Length: 164
Image (tube, rainbow, N blue to C red):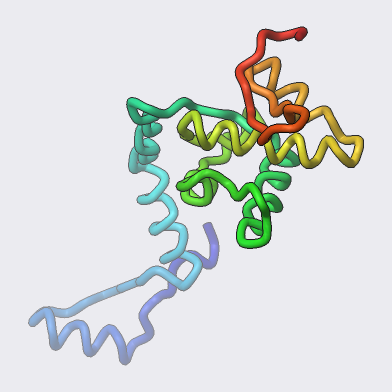
């Protein structure tokens, strides 16, 4: 506890006596460290603020959980939006921007529409063309949608049963 308070010298006690209108025999005030200890103790005694409730997906949305590496793939896909023949679905960039990271699950949580989910599947398809198919496979197993190009027609992402 030493060093948490500073004793008033005789000059300071005389000033305090004049202010109080009576003799002040002794006086002390918190030192810099004492002030910090009091401030810390007060903050520690207050209840910890609860985080706001997690927002729920909208009526036409679902919650999608992506690993950090998968989120990096989606961000890369979004960065190419202006140059792609098949750009991301409208609003996917906003869904990525407002995504929340859940540390305990090591997942990014996004609220996306079916069109945006198909765009995510397409991003994983593009990554899979480089031989990294893990994201596309996990996304297909978890959310039942993978991108499958159709021979001779425009490609699309389709719902699929796991294992097809």
